Image (cartoon, rainbow, N blue to C red; front, side, top):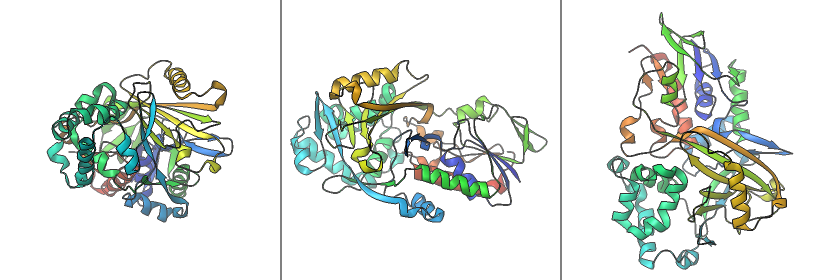
Length: 409
């Protein structure tokens, strides 16, 4: 079969990787290189992801793929520390003593929060899908825990849509991040960056004869005479990994709209650490970014030479104007970083970085097969109620297994 895969991100590459070699495969990728949100910058002698990434101990399919690709020896398990920037002060929140010292929650608040964290994995996401995270936290833990701890997280991730986000997403996020020790979270990373994964997958699918067309968006989709036409080219089957709304815009099926949001991520190379050794610093104080992610407080500084920091923000619609300049100005002022300490910076923005898990989202998740198409991506079941690299690989694998069954409904 001649197969077109729309989108060369992780799900699209996974679909191409798992498809049997007898298929003739073409992958269309709108950007200059594959990988989607997992693509990287080349900075001097190293690569660094455009958007911060790490993997979790429960990402079994991703770890298995690393083994199959022969790059599992690059996987290292590191400690991810967290904290809050509140009222102009950095508060680490890793050890029991640090958590006890955090002034914006009472002892009872902290006990309730700890109990929720411990039982998160046993909670049923389906039962929480129609309840907002805001309502759930206030009812379960109290208003102070919501406003002092969870609202900044929701604001940083979803902006004005935070009031619509479901409790299912929140509990899913807590569950996926539950591999914690006494001083931090156990997280995985690849020595050399996730570019190693994208390069290895691209090499394998290339050896299978897969054609990868970069800087090529899918602009039209049409069904006729038992075939599909994508950009005027004829295919026996199509696997689409782009948002369902974007697929509908070019001729795909009319499905319920899945809400998406954009991400703007500024990456800085600094000559110093600005976050007091903390990897993930959530911003309780309002800023043009919701988190300061200091990559080299996680991965060894010796791999890079520069202190690498991500400033992350999410938006709806178009990327805000001058957001990179606003981020740099605020960061330098707030963290006492002189402009001369910035060795380099890069700005990445994607209007469709990921779904927004609003209440009722579960009912919107499309089946893989839709009117002869196969659809898989961050909107698929393996990425509910929280998206991950692991979920995208599962979605690509499951989509590839359905290819012989694709037919017009």
